[in-house]
Length: 68
Image (cartoon, rainbow, N blue to C red; front, side, top):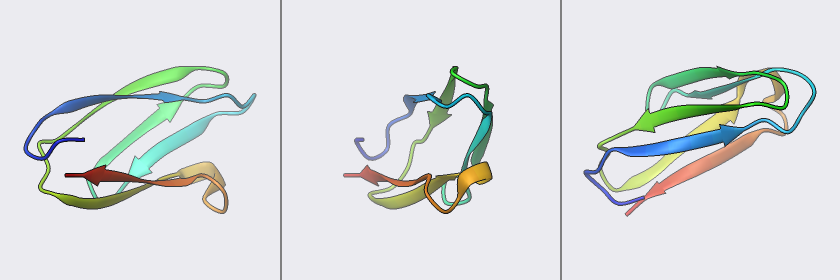
Protein backbone atom coordinates (compact mmCIF):
# COMPACT_ATOMS: atom_id res chain seq x y z
CA UNK A 1 0.00 0.00 0.00
CA UNK A 2 1.35 3.46 -0.74
CA UNK A 3 2.31 5.69 2.19
CA UNK A 4 0.13 8.69 3.07
CA UNK A 5 -2.86 7.31 1.14
CA UNK A 6 -6.23 6.09 2.40
CA UNK A 7 -7.07 2.63 1.01
CA UNK A 8 -9.94 0.18 1.10
CA UNK A 9 -9.26 -3.37 2.28
CA UNK A 10 -11.79 -6.13 1.64
CA UNK A 11 -11.56 -8.92 4.21
CA UNK A 12 -12.98 -12.29 3.08
CA UNK A 13 -13.92 -14.90 5.67
CA UNK A 14 -13.97 -18.30 3.97
CA UNK A 15 -14.80 -20.10 7.21
CA UNK A 16 -18.25 -21.20 8.47
CA UNK A 17 -17.67 -19.31 11.76
CA UNK A 18 -17.46 -15.56 12.39
CA UNK A 19 -14.12 -13.79 12.71
CA UNK A 20 -13.05 -10.37 13.91
CA UNK A 21 -10.44 -8.62 11.79
CA UNK A 22 -8.35 -6.54 14.18
CA UNK A 23 -5.25 -4.37 14.26
CA UNK A 24 -3.96 -2.45 17.23
CA UNK A 25 -1.21 -1.06 14.95
CA UNK A 26 -3.66 0.84 12.71
CA UNK A 27 -6.56 0.89 15.17
CA UNK A 28 -9.27 -1.07 13.35
CA UNK A 29 -11.58 -3.93 14.18
CA UNK A 30 -14.44 -5.33 12.18
CA UNK A 31 -16.65 -8.39 12.59
CA UNK A 32 -16.72 -10.56 9.47
CA UNK A 33 -19.68 -12.92 9.22
CA UNK A 34 -19.28 -16.61 8.29
CA UNK A 35 -18.50 -17.02 4.58
CA UNK A 36 -18.84 -13.25 4.25
CA UNK A 37 -16.76 -10.17 3.62
CA UNK A 38 -16.25 -6.77 5.20
CA UNK A 39 -14.70 -3.53 4.03
CA UNK A 40 -12.15 -1.70 6.18
CA UNK A 41 -10.69 1.70 5.34
CA UNK A 42 -7.11 2.32 6.48
CA UNK A 43 -4.80 5.28 6.37
CA UNK A 44 -3.21 7.44 5.56
CA UNK A 45 -0.26 5.66 7.21
CA UNK A 46 3.47 6.30 7.28
CA UNK A 47 5.85 3.83 5.64
CA UNK A 48 6.30 0.73 7.78
CA UNK A 49 4.86 -2.66 8.65
CA UNK A 50 1.55 -2.95 10.51
CA UNK A 51 0.28 -6.19 12.07
CA UNK A 52 -3.29 -7.47 11.90
CA UNK A 53 -4.96 -10.68 13.12
CA UNK A 54 -8.20 -12.59 13.43
CA UNK A 55 -9.20 -12.07 17.05
CA UNK A 56 -11.09 -15.38 17.31
CA UNK A 57 -8.21 -17.44 15.81
CA UNK A 58 -5.07 -15.57 16.83
CA UNK A 59 -2.89 -18.69 16.67
CA UNK A 60 -3.32 -18.99 12.88
CA UNK A 61 -5.00 -15.85 11.52
CA UNK A 62 -2.17 -13.30 11.38
CA UNK A 63 -0.80 -11.00 8.74
CA UNK A 64 0.90 -7.72 8.06
CA UNK A 65 0.22 -4.66 5.98
CA UNK A 66 3.32 -3.25 4.30
CA UNK A 67 3.24 0.48 3.57
CA UNK A 68 5.91 1.84 1.25
